[in-house]
Image (cartoon, rainbow, N blue to C red):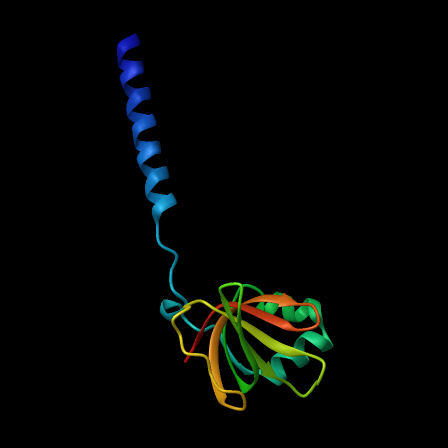
Length: 133
């Protein structure tokens, strides 16, 4: 009886160990493969956060959003590519950190659609793991 319990325990440890290894090595889904939850303009997205941040957080936080707008700035710094979309508020932007470092940066003034995951609002709305469409 005791050896049976030992074998069951060892089998359980093996199964849990294999599951842990599988989960640890699982690839993160690319933003390209994710379904868009919302489509909105940069100005409208910022406006929703400025008007009622709590409501906007409940709607957009951790959601995949396709945002359209005009590129006001793009930069590559500390091995990260960042694109800024202008809004009607000159002091705030919608900021995207690109997922793919090989992606070509858009020119300033270009009208683009960028898909990303919304992480919230401080002075700007920030989206990560973004991909220019």
